Length: 129
Image (tube, rainbow, N blue to C red; front, side):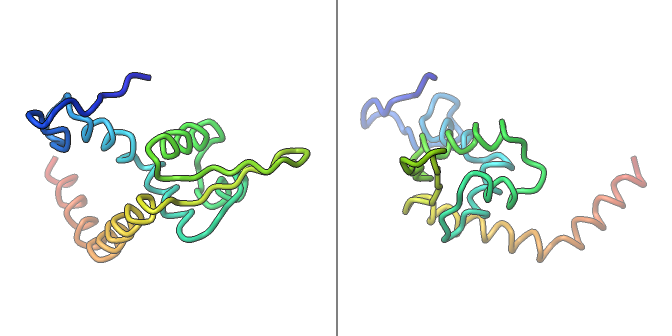
């Protein structure tokens, strides 16, 4: 996996509009439906893999694994393996993950608030198309 590095003060790595910025790479990793749903599902809890899979309806084992690895790589999720047979693996949000969850929560609130307006706009658009 190739990762962009913060190079020097002259380049703005926090600019998500630049295709070559580290911020764009991070944004791409976390701004997908599964990552956002996982962050919301974990919340303030510690969950095992199967509990998390049950919380996020419709996610496959493969997609949950891939997204948990991305979230862990970006420092948003801590993965703890307990040395039992079979191994028990638990996931919890880190401080940056909890901060992002507040943003995800705001997005969920926005969705609830404007769901009716969005549905109306969709119906109108589809009728005109």
